[in-house]
Length: 243
Ligand code: UDP
Image (cartoon, rainbow, N blue to C red; front, top):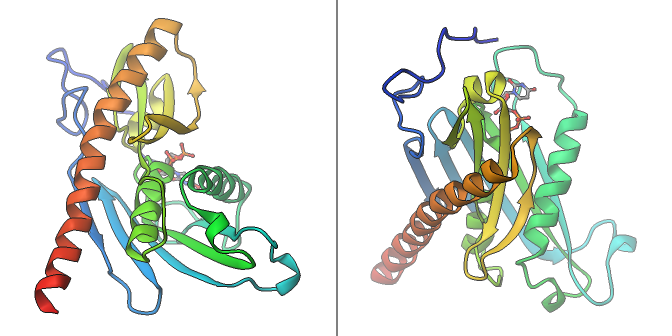
């Protein structure tokens, strides 16, 4: 485990990786990165690297799980064994099971499941490298992969964590800030409706800090949402040019 730096925020207000408190890490996004799945996306926030793949809508399997009036959405969040420094158990950990559930519940709020009775939509999120914010990066990638698969949705989901580090509110925590900071709050939003689809809080914030933290998250999310739409536009406009 990475050791705690002497200071997480310098006297000049600069963070361990050189960012200002309200800055995102360098972000990369790409869709259509895999051939075998119906939709896919690669998203990177600094050292956190995630691939999402989507299959469906396809016949639900096993068939007795199919629902007569809507599709089921399956979601698996998984960290590869090489994504972290310490030895990670090969099977699904309790944390991965929990994150799969909260990510699924967030995605269910935007996907038009009722359009595909008896079908399943399967979302796989693989964390290739973890450096804080893997659930938010995973959600951001999963919604891009769903859009890439052409699955009808009310909106994309954009997500980022905010937190408190040495008394200062910061956007998009890296692993060291997550581990040694006072609070970590992942937020996911469907920006078109400004509806919060995931909100968790590890640590403590005062009501005032919570309000400010949400504002900071919304600012980051607006930027992430813009990048998501650009990424999709780029793929589909180049596909049109090739046709
Ligand atoms: N982490 C780790 N090993 C684990 C789980 C997490 O090293 O088994 C690290 C990883 O960098 C992760 C960070 O701890 O991004 C924060 O984990 P948390 O559970 O808060 O979820 P996340 O911030 O990734 O959504």
